[in-house]
Length: 85
Image 1 (tube, helix red, strand yellow):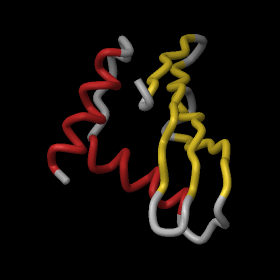
Image 2 (cartoon, rainbow, N blue to C red; image 1 turned 90 degrees about the horizontal axis):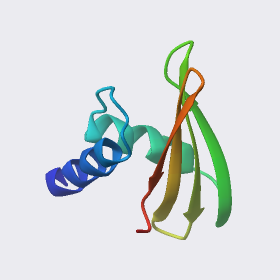
Image 3 (tube, one colour; image 1 turned 180 degrees about the vertical axis):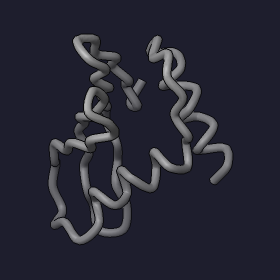
Image 4 (cartoon, one colour; image 1 turned 90 degrees about the vertical axis):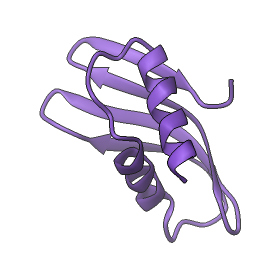
């Protein structure tokens, strides 16, 4: 799992986002969004602070989820992270 967390952090960094994101924490927050939802494609929102939030799209399947993208909104700036690329 540590490799997955590192990949998450790298993709977010490559988006140009200047803030720190912990891969493990990010994964756990997104995973919590997927818990107990039926199979399908969902748009989600995770508020981090008064000015920072994540908005993304994921597909939920029987025993896993596939995170397609996350847009990190930091004030008026949006950083797009494409997890399918």
